[in-house]
Amino acid sequence: MNATLHSPLANDPDFHPVLVEFVSELPERSQLIRATLGGRDFPALRRVAHQLKGAFGGYGYPALTNLAADVERLIDSGEGVREITVACERLLDGICMVSAEPETL
Image 1 (spheres, rainbow, N blue to C red):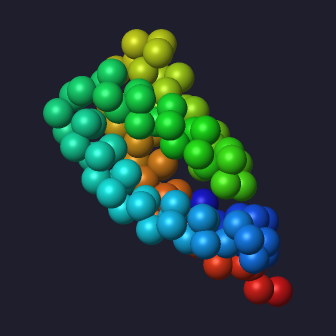
Image 2 (cartoon, rainbow, N blue to C red; image 1 turned 60 degrees about the horizontal axis):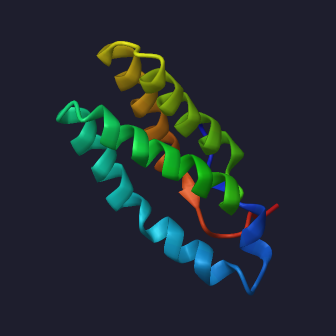
């Protein structure tokens, strides 16, 4: 991913404030991913990934839904730390690109 990720819901004036709040909480979620990964707390990391998978789907970020699902799937399948770390890095990179603002043409 190399572009800002916009949600189609950002264009909805009723939903936009909720989206802004969600996006403002993503740095805290990123820190939680780093902390659980660093502590090798894979059950907690799986819960965070699962929650983000649902949230990203609901807020209109399907690419991030897929990245969070990858983390969850790797943990569920018992993959090694390296594979899980790479998936988390991809997810964290994607989170950094999220915008709550409408896409401008």
